[in-house]
Image (tube, rainbow, N blue to C red; front, top):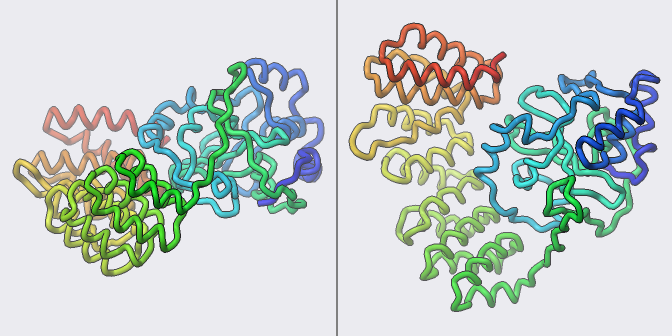
Length: 426
């Protein structure tokens, strides 16, 4: 994804794509900026001046007219709140995070989501957002194509870079050795916004020394930093930290090993995941998500089939790895009883169509508790499924079941879930 500092040059191709004299007036732009209490980034402003609202011919995404842009948090409150609940500090260095050619769409600053500006309608569960919390020296805002189906944010340096990429336009790369954007701590519109201090890159030798500190917080921080630094020394040190006397340090060490997904850590992670080290089961199991080998798959399948406290977590990891062998034991868990029933069936919606097919017949099961469990999965399909056809089928099935369901409590649940899922299935 190329970058240039001149927004007008970046968007010169608009002359050949959009109609002249169809853009927003300067007065319209100024009015909206006054309403938002912030100045729009240059490339997006230039675009609006050329075309005030536009549907890309290459897709379904419709860019809004300037008078219809909204803060994301106000328009899609449930959407951003769902992500805010999972907000965690980014375990990546700034220089790597802002290298957009090497990004992972699942790694983005969730805290910024609430402050983004929504400039498109929803299409295929995706919207285009401008992020005023990240501003480059030329005034450009980071731009996100934010989606449930990815899921996450595909990030661009600017609106111009996004639209150039979508229309396969070429432009000269910006020579910006070491350039980084300003990252704000305060929301847009606030006077004298605070700026996040530049991240200091830790020195490996110093981090390794901190890992031997008598203070638990220092060892915990060191375990996190080793996950960012990587390398054989970091892996060896983290494996050793899995036996730290404090479970919190062990938990963070397992998490960092998951980021590094080194083959040398498999044995240690399996040992931590089976409960023998105490207090790190879920973190170690989650770390195995980044692997795709048969040995860890067999361990996870055995954990899933054995039930117990870790079965659900193992099932989730297998679903993220796309291992369809997990479907049968998850389906079997639908029928589990007792004080602590196996709840790994919660993960069946992660398998999309394959999960839907095995659950659909159980919507009419004679046991009302089984119907309740299946209904929860169907509601998840109807609201979150990436495949539109699966989402729609699940929604229609919920409506059919409401018409024939005899259990009054379950009928109430169906009514509520249908209301919640309706906007996603218009």
